[in-house]
Image 1: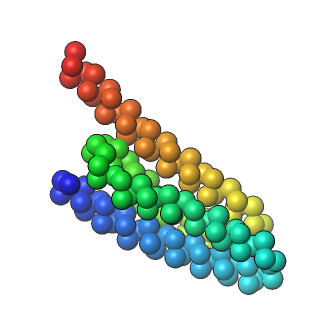
Image 2: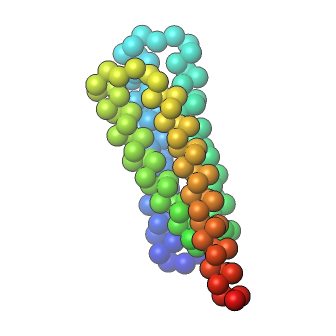
Length: 131
């Protein structure tokens, strides 16, 4: 693994753990504050699934090309920071819990898009080099 990618991987790993922990903490606070039912526990699981997916992608990223790895690491950093901000505002402003369903779905879409974009960039670069 190249040095800049190694540093980016380390930062993404820290942000991934902080994002997962912070998101789970904010969901737990929301469950407590809203005096929610057992269904809210499933929200907590759903909120954590993108972080599990990003963790798996992070472990696979060193095998991928550099642009794909960079895209995944940058998306991990972005989604981890955004999740804490979004869930924090949701809890602070007492917005309904729909965000706990919507934001993880968006996170999964961003993960898939970043992998696709990185691999597409590599394919275009290879084609140009072959021509």
